[in-house]
Length: 139
Length: 92
Image (cartoon, rainbow over the protein chains, first blue to last red):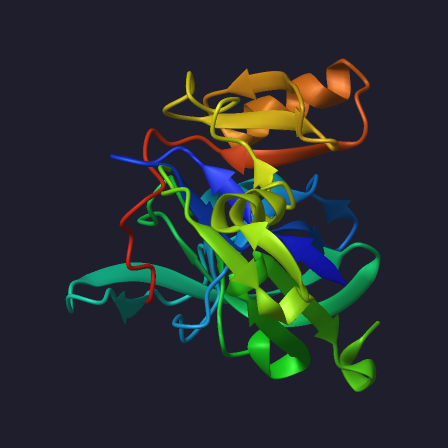
C-alpha cells in the first residue's frame, strides 16, 4: 500500500509528514482511523494514553517505565500490546502508552514491532510511503 | 513554499519541463491539511476520508469519537490538532 505524505501547518512554513490512518483494536473495541506518524528513528511505538482510555485498556497494574527523548529527557510510559489495522491489514504490536507525548504527534509508530513486521519504504523524493505487513505476521 | 522557477530539462522523464512543474506535480500527490487545520490548535478533529472537510472537533479523543457516533458519521479520519507540526525530533 502506498500512502502520500500529509502537509500540515508549520512555523514558519508548512511541513510534510509520513502519516498513515491506523485503527487501533483491543478486544471488542476499536478506534476510528487515526493519522499516525511513521517514525524510523523511534525505538518503540508510542501512543497517547487517550487511546488506552478510549479502548478500556487499564494501565493501573502496569509498572511505569522511562523512555528518553532525543535530548535525554525522560518521560513515563506504560508497556502494552495492541492490534493495528491499516486498510484492512492487521498486525499486533507492542506499544508504550504515555501521557507525555506532544499533541502534534500522539501516535508514533517505531522500530520494535512495527518496522520489524513490515516492509517500509520512504520515498520522500516523491512524497510517498510504501508499507506492506509481512505475510507471516498478518492476522 | 517558494520555489524558484528555473527552466530545466528533466532528462529522467525524457521531456522538457520546469522545476516548478516538476515540484507541483509531486506536491499534488500529497494530502494537504495545512488550510483545514489552520484554525485548530488543540484537541482532536475528524476529517472526511477525502480530506476535504472537518466534520467534528473536540477537546479529547473520547469526546470527538462520541460526537461522531451520535451523528452516525462514517468514513472519517482523526488527527490531533496542533498549531505547529514542524521542527520536532520525534525519536524516542
